[in-house]
Amino acid sequence: MTGEQRLKAFAETSYKKTLTKVNHHIYHFLGYGISNSIAVIGDTSVILIDALDCPDYARELKRELAELTDKPVKTIIYTHGHPDHRGGAGAFRDTVEEVIAFAPEKPMLQYYDRLNHVLNQRGTYQFGYELTDEEAISEGIGIREGIAVGKGGFDPIPPTILYREKAVERVIDGVKLKMVSAPGETDDQIFVWLENDRVICTGDNYYGCWPNLYAIRGTQYRDIAAWVETLDAILSYEAEALLPGHTKPLVGRELVREQIKTFRDAIEYVLLETLDCMDKGMTMSETVERVKLPEKYQDKDYLGEYYGTVEWSVKGIYCGYVGWFDGNAANLMPVSDREYQAVLRDLIGTEKLMEKIRTCIETEQYQLALQLLEIAGNEEAGGGEQAACNAGKKQAEDREQTECRKLKKEALLGRARQMTSANARHYLIASAKNLG
Image: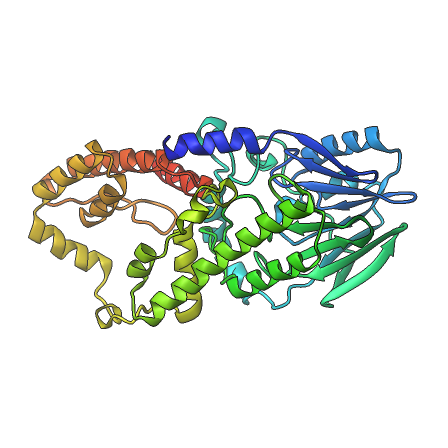
């Protein structure tokens, strides 16, 4: 199957709307939004762990809850601050009395607000917000967000209590629970342990595909070593059911242990292999080429690259540990890309270069075609990429610009069909559509 076909098959089997009754008072809601929600029914009220991504989805959840119990939702616990887990909270504003969240263990870098324009644009590309359902297929870890399909925007309720402790134990409406700070995908991530039920709710530190150890929309470094430690902590609770923030729940102690241990080990493998390559003096490109998942992990769908990818993970780790410089003196203070590409273009010759690009597209070597188009002087508006083509002589400029744009669009869409990662697919298609 192509990457596109594999993503479709995964989405069709992974995100069917499913209400799982974990036990007499815990329910897991899958496929009601891009994220999951967990309802814990207490003595007189419902505790909701995460609240989906938008009010329209959450109102459907609210109707489902009314079929299960006449008790109102009075408490919401956010596993972390991402909007796809908080955006539906407003649907419960009429009954909610307490909203619980944790402060990040380390603060965000200052002045991120100065990047709002570019981060919002990259986020729109990553999540495929402006794509059709056919173009987007899914968001990799769930159905499309409400904001992308006309279900309304985010409507979170701000926390009424923000804990800064490492762990907090409480009894809420007769339900004993422990909330544990658990940095991983985010620094404000927590997991919730329901001791009497032997159930753990893990937020986004586990879901059933390769995670965003690095998000292409742009984030500060996600500490992968801390993420592995968090997975060790989750394993230490010996849960009989694990309820993730995305993808299917895991029910049964052996299944939980086997799957989370494998997930943990695969992430640690990529981290340590990347560091070993770096220590040998390998460049980032050489490290990406070397670090692959071992064969024992490659047949496991819950490690499939439907969301994040191993390649992005390796690059994120590389930059997170040593920054942009790869140790090669030639890359210490290089000439600009524009100057370097112009020299290559002169050496190769425009006609020969364009002929090679066309051949690459005909033979489905789309990535190579895209990189050669950069040398051809390809420029694309938006996303920090170049915006127009200029492939040589002044008198042929308009014609060459048109051909470059046509070829780049074809290469972007072809590359998208090869992708299993929804994020990669979205970004490539959005970039192609931006070319007109």
